[in-house]
Length: 300
Image (tube, rainbow, N blue to C red):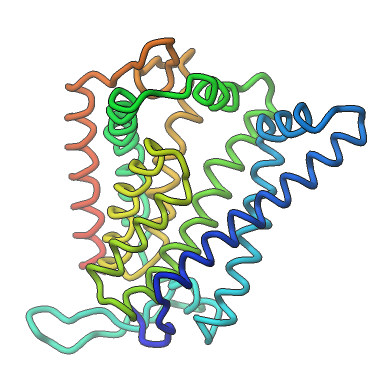
């Protein structure tokens, strides 16, 4: 981690998460009020906003942008590129040697495209074991079928615009904004306050809380551990964004009509599970991709 990041205590980090959620919700409320002016009641207007990827993407973008601006001002002084940890100032030397500089060229991140590609591939593969973790939680504590159907409907693409808006919201805006906040700002400050292990754990817990419901929270917590560890090893947020993009992209870009995957993009009245062989194979692919990403990162 760079030394210019200010320490962030867990309660301050929680405050930033709550601010991002509140600001995003406020933007959704404004969108619902606009729809009410078109003759809808509040309940129908709110439901329409929740089904509209354009509104969801815009609300997340504005809510997280506000939070990032405040966090940058209070906890991460210095050049913008250092705030978002795209340009690490140093990395550990090998076998006890002093840290070596990794300056970017003309302000560009030093992380190679190969590292980013392998991180993205790891994210695609991780979607299956992460989805199965959520399925197992649902099997233990039950599932809100209405919510599951709402999510399934959100992922359904009926037009070219729907596909574009959904991809922009879930595959572009969500990974970038969440990674810039959690791994770009909060993780750095938490590590300064508590050390790498505790900082990583606290950041993952907060990432889980962001996603709300128990199953989604546990999935996000596990993903947060992987993302945070990747951030600490590569000292760049770019591989984290790529991995997050991969995780979100699979259910969006691979609909059930194209390739049905039980437990991932197929909805049933009963809880479906990803076939164990597919979970194991995906976990191996993700592990190999992460290993190669870290290997190429060390060779940069």
